[in-house]
Image (cartoon, rainbow, N blue to C red; front, side):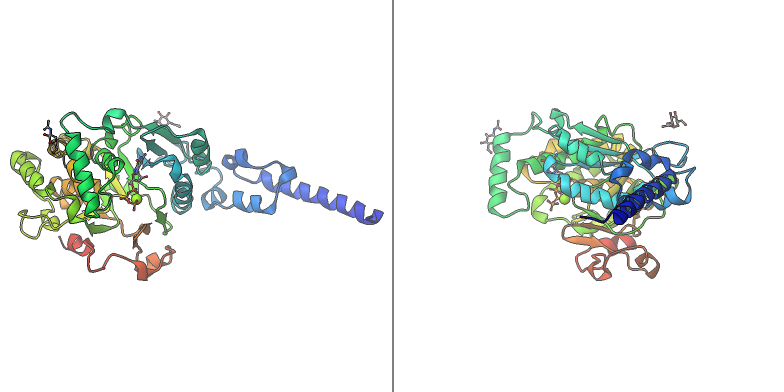
Length: 382
Ligand SMILES: Nc1nc2c(ncn2[C@@H]2O[C@H](COP(=O)(O)OP(=O)(O)OP(=O)(O)O)[C@@H](O)[C@H]2O)c(=O)[nH]1
Ligand SMILES: *[C@@H]1O[C@H](CO)[C@@H](O)[C@H](O)[C@H]1NC(C)=O
Ligand SMILES: *[C@@H]1O[C@H](CO)[C@@H](O)[C@H](O)[C@H]1NC(C)=O
Ligand SMILES: [Mg+2]
């Protein structure tokens, strides 16, 4: 039994706490009120969470609502684009938490999530809860995720068996091939992607380690860049045995598409005779969609698609995007985003400069940039 005096004291304390909490809530920026819990269930954690974002704290009458134009007049017509499945929900949420806290809570860029089958409502609700930005969910049209008529499916199935026996990475997988072909040629034309000028490709489970005090999309736009990357590596040779001979065919039949200031030197040691297998690791890429929707790129993709290597071999979208960029863009239109600390399973780009280290929570010992096999040095020297 609690003594009467203590009971009065408890009631007074509760009342006082309620008053303080309400008073604090009044000071919170508008954009967060919708997600604010009712006063009766308020914990100190909720307050910390709500008051956390620097942009909303420091500047409550501008920038507090990332969705409106006026708050960020410089926002580029761009989005994050992610191809994934329901099973990737939790990895995607972790990735979004990092993307939001290191960059997007200040900019409010929208997200486009694509899948070859419809997402569940559970998935959508839990993705939406990770951001105040616009979020769109789309389905890949069937004609972009199936066999074109010219492909001999018996031959494709035999090729998968044979590559599985040789332990080729994803050699046995049919869905992986549809994914690579989709990312190579069709994703830029999806109806939810069509209206954007730039996109930043993200995959579920990747990490971002640096606080970004600039907008990569704005850099792309103001510097007229067409392709941005963080990691450059060699491709597994056994996934692309005949890719280069088809590229050479393209160079011969479409000289009009080859840039005069290209970076062929980056991807070939012998002026185009052979491919050195270097590519931008396309699980991260920031790209100008007008290039990937151009006649030049479309001619390139169509030639490769006709050759059948997405199915008879296991051509990845990384070498396809990279070879296209190296041949058809000017070298100066491609940018290494050193400032963006990034990890996709196996490899990490961790900026080493002292000033960037202050902004990046990553260990420079894990940085892949100067590893023996990395293709970055060669790119930077081109
Ligand atoms: N909707 C859908 N997305 C897929 C499918 N297969 C792969 N993806 C997505 O395509 C991208 C690349 O696939 P990953 O499995 O990450 O391939 P990877 O990056 O080469 O290899 P790991 O990450 O090591 O598995 C990721 O964004 C995946 O979520 C699929 O069958 N359906
Ligand atoms: C953003 O600005 C454009 C033109 O300036 C306008 O058409 C559009 O409605 C605005 N959108 C929002 C959300 O304010
Ligand atoms: C399809 O491929 C199989 C296996 O390589 C081959 O035996 C068959 O003749 C091919 N069919 C056609 C119509 O080319
Ligand atoms: Mg991946």
